[in-house]
Image (cartoon, rainbow, N blue to C red; front, side, top):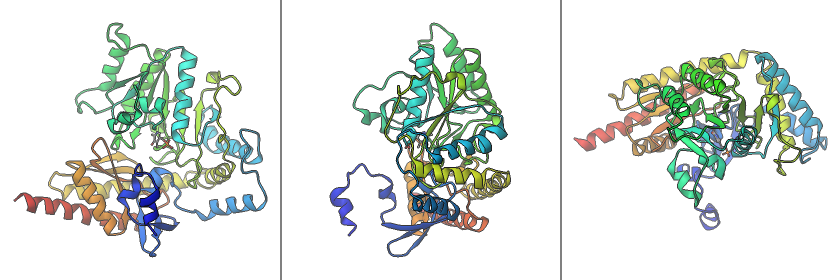
Length: 423
Ligand SMILES: *Cc1c(COP(=O)(O)O)cnc(C)c1O
């Protein structure tokens, strides 16, 4: 049965290689394969399932909507589902944070939202250059990929990726070097070779790039540098947003106001494709239909997204839970690192943390060993050297503890084997 994948599906598949089973069902923090085997899910659709698999409240909202013959596809026309989503975004996200954003519905994937953000920034400023950061990941369509660091992705473009200047992310040159100073100098020096940028695009925690977490001070510096020069600041919150770091937007603790924000992955709350690009109302300089797309109104996603905002973001209780689990994860990872004789280092922020390993081989071996013990977990980073914990945010203390136990056993087993082999 499983051979149909081998026979028909392109070799481009990636996650399936790490988890060579056929998944059948899922609930909360667990996945089940066709043999009924249970797996704790620390991948969560690469951060798409912040509220877990098939959350009963979201599922009921969707079932009710479908049963009532609610609109499924409506291009970008006004629907009741979209109206309610915009209202929920206003009431539960923008208003309590004092934010004023216009909402653009882009095509349904993250890279669509990034393309819209880049295009808008270039059109408004009349400048073509965009600053992106080392190890950044913004998607694999050409414009977004030009802003992506990883050569594995870039090399597949088959044509030059242009219009982006890479700059060192926070900490890229070691703790002693403030890379914001380099950015400011390079932008201001008319002889640096850096064309005056339309925008700076940044992730506050680099999800695919190895869980590098920018400091709040650095983010404020980047914000200040942009603001003073009329350069638009784009925060790509596709992975770090929707509560992943403990606040709805990952930039909230830095107290900054990006000009443009992209959201996708967990926005629908149910794993349904949905992406938006948010920007200051003055930046809404699109002409009607100038940037379009057939799937800009996933009404089923609006329904679950609305219910997710109402359920989890109408007060502070959920955010407080995420913060408590984040502390548990931090402590657990620090404790594993402490037993690793310096081989492992904890990285990241919120429920977006992991363990940096000496190399990609070690990280892959640890992830494989975890899978053998019933934990689905992936690696990230330039060499795939970071084992990345991306559990659903609704995970219980017990479940997170179970996952950390499996990770500890697996990490110490693999490191132990390496030491025995070396001696
Ligand atoms: C996943 C991701 C994207 C791309 O989203 P897709 O839906 O895969 O196109 C862009 N930016 C960040 C930060 C991401 O994590």
